[in-house]
Image (cartoon, rainbow, N blue to C red; front, top):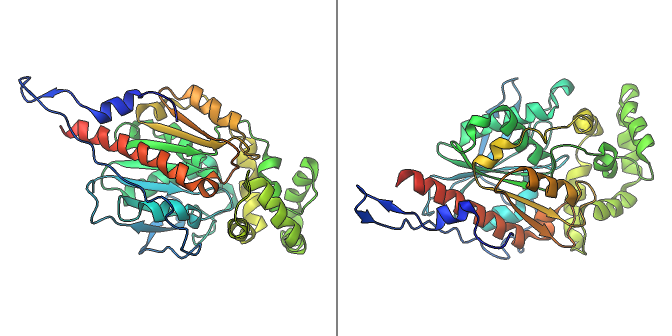
Length: 352
C-alpha cells in the first residue's frame, strides 16, 4: 500500500461543506471490517450461495452465486469477483469467508470454466470476457459496483474498461487488479502448469496445436504426469511455503479444466495489448496487487499498470506468488477492504 492518503481516500474520509453553504458536516463512511483468518476452518469449495444463471450476448449460460448482506450498513454496494485462467469461483474462498454478510458480493465462473457452459472457441477472447463481465454487472448489481479480477479476471476488468469506459466513475466505483497484466505476456509461461511437464515454450506451442489431432491426447498426458504436475503447480502458484491443501486445491481446479478449454484461450494471451487503454480505470479508485515472486504475471506487469493508471495504489506482497489471493489472503483482504471503503466514500459523496 502506498504511504500517505490518495485523492480517493481523502475524498472518502472527510467531505466538505454542504447545505446552502452555511452548515458544515462530515460524512462518515461506512466501515467494512473483514474477518482476519476467516475461511481457515472451512474446507475449500464448501462456501455456497443461491445460484443465478446469467446469459451472455452470444447465448452462453454463466454460473453465478450471490452472497447477500442483509446486516450490512452499506447495502448499496455490490462487489463482483472475477477468477483467473483454469480456475473457478471457488478460488475466492478466503475473500468470500471474510466479506460474507458484510457487503453484497457476486462470484461467477467465466465461460468454459467451472459450472458455466462451454463456449465456442472463436468466442474465447479477452474482448468477449469484458462483455461477459458487463453483462454480469448489469444483471447482478442494482447500484454501484466494485469489480475485482485475478489474472485472466483482471484482464476481463481491463477489457470492460477499454470497451465501456463510460461505466467507470459512474456505475463502477472501484476496481482491483490482482496478479494480472494488460499485455506483454509470454503465453508459454502462463500455460505451462496445464500441459505435460518438462516442455519448453516451443513444445508448449506444439502441444496446443495437438488439439487439431485430438485434445484427449494431451489430457491423457496430463493425467500420467499427475504427481509431477502438482509439484509444478506449487512452484508456479506460490512463492513461500503454503499448506499442502492450498496446492491440492489449485491443482484440482487446473486439472479439472479440459485442455481443449486451455487451448481455446491460448491465442488471447499471445495477442493481448491493452496498455494504451487504461484511462477509464483512473476514473474510480483502483488497487493493484501482486506477489513479488509471481512467475506467471511478474511484478513488473503490476508496476507498469500502476504507472499507467493515474491515482492507483500498488500493493506488493513480498515473497508471494501468482495465487497471492490464497497465499496472503489476510493482506489481500485488507487491501480490498480499504478499496471498498474508498468506493463507499465516493458513493456517499455523490449522495451528500
